[in-house]
Length: 257
Image 1: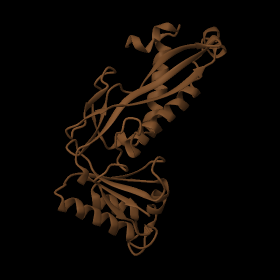
Image 2 (image 1 turned 135 degrees about the vertical axis):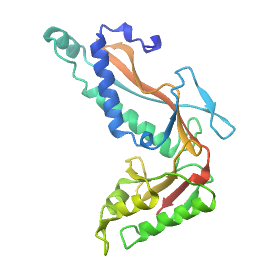
Image 3 (image 1 turned 180 degrees about the vertical axis):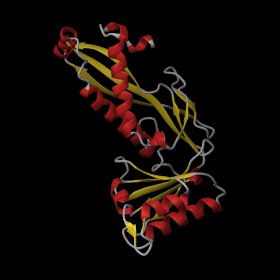
Image 4 (image 1 turned 90 degrees about the horizontal axis):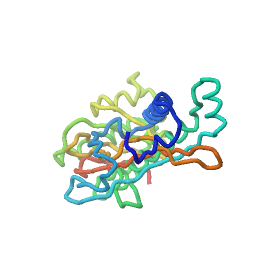
């Protein structure tokens, strides 16, 4: 493990660090949405600060992190009683880190100037009809697919939606006996994902594939030791990422206003 993480500066066993890594990775994986459909480029290493964005420019990777504390009493009890550490604070920090990652992927990063799927300029925008009624959702998605075909964009697709839209699509389409979400999945030959980061009444149709979009990773999500404060021990979960949109025609955004 890299020395800059300062893991040797605290008297933890390999098993304790392994348990922290397990909790952080499992918690983050259960929340992360972007990594479920994006191709990953890397990890490239913690020292990589900027890379080619795949579109002819060099962009800075976004620094994502979340901190947590384990109290000294917790550590001493674990040693004295030979029991596992309570890692609920690590899980909470991993949740925050995962949401930060998806926010960067979907909304962009104002500090580095990197674009997100929803904030990128040059993508196709479609004013969405009321997806609670009739075949409006199916019709809008079909329109987006047609836009992509006319732009010469082919390949597997995913639909990313806000939680309220996800609920609206979880209804049986009248006259078909089939869930609206299932009909759309069959139409795009792909999956539907929801994310709490998505603004209400928003959706994005994306043609995936490394030729269109990917997620570059410098340092993948990992936990380091920060030091002690008032005898308690502070930790940081960190990573560096950059969303690389290489083909704006591979994204169609649906908005309600």
